[in-house]
Length: 70
Image 1 (cartoon, rainbow, N blue to C red):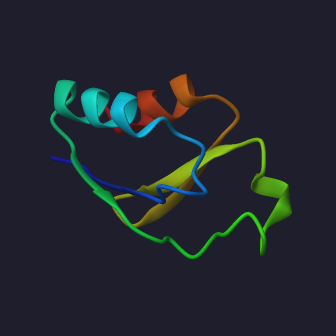
Image 2: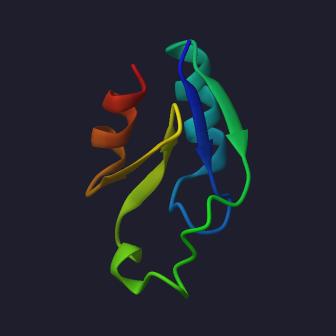
Image 3: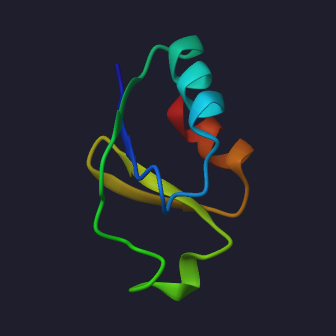
């Protein structure tokens, strides 16, 4: 089971949608700060990002990130 961490405020996901996807692919999802605020990292403003098994994953679409969660 993969462990996924995303920030509710900065990772650009709809919280209900990513919760549903995590349940479908059997991932452990946690909402918390991952230390990549959009204020500190403006290059992430239009990206979808989070940590999967401790590794920072940055994608240009939520579908790409969801595929990494499988």
